[in-house]
Length: 72
Image (cartoon, rainbow, N blue to C red; front, side, top):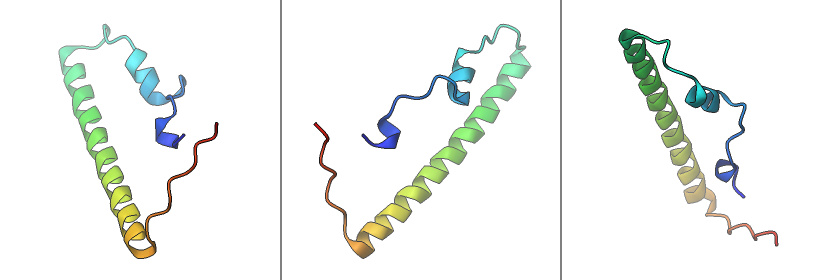
């Protein structure tokens, strides 16, 4: 199983944010939270894209490795 395919740990920050009550936040606070989350999403997407490009360059240079055999 690839690391990205594993279930998200219940204690990670994204899970904590998803479970947090938003009732105490004002409309302005909610707007700011949205802006911060959108910036974080853009940062993560950029990191993912760099990682994919790095992997593609390695695959092009060394050849793509054979798929891992599943443990049954």
